[in-house]
Image (tube, rainbow, N blue to C red):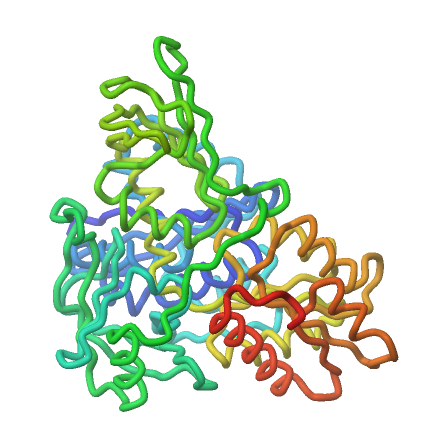
Length: 487
């Protein structure tokens, strides 16, 4: 029986992204079934590169199984590669990256997956107290009306959801859903069947690639929430960032050099996940892009288009100018297979994503407890042990964050200075910020409010009530996206 080799590739696999990769590994027996033959893991501690090689046979090697694995890999923040089908250059890069890895586990059988993955991901930096399960099933988490929802269309009468995404699970798959509803404390669980898939080749203006889900026995609260969204009530905008996110990302910017310069190029930099998701739905999925520039090139001009993604990856492709106006120019392009796979995986991760939070606290136990409480309310949670690490996570985070919960008193930079830097240097005008303190001293609240905190809470409230209050701050900001911090 033929065996197919596949590779799940992750860049910057640390923190929550490392945990997401481990959850994918533990779910492989569910994703691929009895056709999962063996796995191998390779991790580079210096670059945080992670490769999970999978050998599949029988039903696990079919196109449907590969589509399923590609979908869940993308949702975990990685991309699927079939080395046998990759270009020579891509295979050589993968070989060099794997050879540079300093942590390797080979020949892991499905029966040994839980223990072997536990040792491997623990050595890679995953926390010792993390939740792990040998019967893990992947769950599609979404936030109704929240981030990433701009690509979702719902039909409450038919009980269907269309999710715009370039990578989809195969028709017939039954997915476990966890949907966070506005005003509901805990995510609502449901099941859905993949009814139809519209691939990138079938996409057209107004009909992007994506997949249709049919909700099975959806709870009334979920159907009511979807009906409100379908009717256009309480729609939430994508939000805007006042300035660039530190030195890593910036707002959409363009450098255009009109012909006859042979180095003519245009560069579009996506500062946030929302920018990329929206532009993919409107333009990129159709092989087009609109470049905002006061110096548009002439129609028919050839140039190089560079797309800088929020995860730090930059794609480059030849493009042709198809129209020009006073505000910019429209270009058409075709990505090569590798670049298209990278872009597709990045966009698939963004579609209908849940809210994301960062918890910064030097107390490891409290940090974990706060993260667990927020996870229970439908957040994906990243953590940092001090303000310096928190700034790094903010600067490097692949997806936009919706909430920051930070301790006030920490070694080195305190919480007030962290908040001030985020608001004034980082320009994070749309991020909900909650500060927590062991002792609410006189004058602390106004000082933190001036720095830009939305709320100041005492730790004596307990992690569940802190998570509840932080959740309310996020919802208040979503209801009033133009509201000033601290109000």
